[in-house]
Image (cartoon, rainbow, N blue to C red):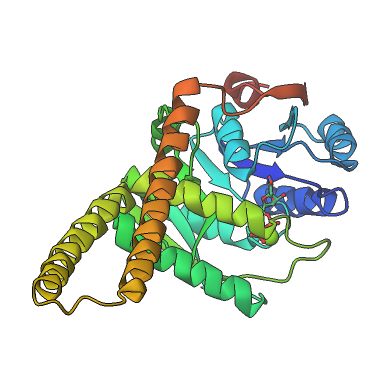
Length: 314
Ligand code: UDP
Ligand code: MG
């Protein structure tokens, strides 16, 4: 059985079409399937649409978060409901072409445990978000050692991998990073990102920045060490400057000097603030993990959770 997990946020116009395309695809591949739709606290009619879909389609389950917990939480919630031998994670807006699923299944049947769909090109995007994404992936590569450039959340995972991901105790997850971190045998398939058919991207710049900081801090503590490094550099600088200042003083040449003082104040002040900020980011993370709150809260569920046996022995 194959499970398809789809995080859904404010997609009332799109989701019905997406589901029908995916179902058609899976029926053609004559695969038994379970569809898990996770409504990430949508504010529009998405939940009503999901409810009526779950009445009409067997094998479709929907769960609804009590508020918007973010795509990462939605994916984890979906995975926790997955009962298939393999699990495909994809977007609700058909920007992850379902035509790729049979190809991914082929690879999985050959024994590959993680099949990643890689963006051949990023589709139509503003140059600002293109630049932001490339900067993010470059830094991420340096910091964590995982090259996620052009990676997407569109993946097929073996049951084992899903279990491994669900065992991660951390509450703030970064799915793309974690699914690289767990290892396993992997293969790639390529796709071109099609245009979004309805609505626009659900990510605001603020949400993206939050995702990026979450990703960095969960995969590397290098920024913290970087702070120490800068500290040492400035210490050396200040020793040199200190000696020079003393020498000037002794030779009776010390006049003015305001520039140096002001410059030093500015540089040291800003470095201190940056360092504190970085430490703050990690402390915030520790704080969030220590609170040990659940990743998400489910407020409603619908559909008939098909158990494996009810599918195989109807
Ligand atoms: N999404 C979500 N919660 C959010 C934002 C987005 O579940 O807070 C879902 C959204 O419904 C879609 C997927 O994540 O299925 C990707 O979102 P979108 O297409 O807006 O992102 P983009 O294609 O621009 O990366
Ligand atoms: Mg999209």
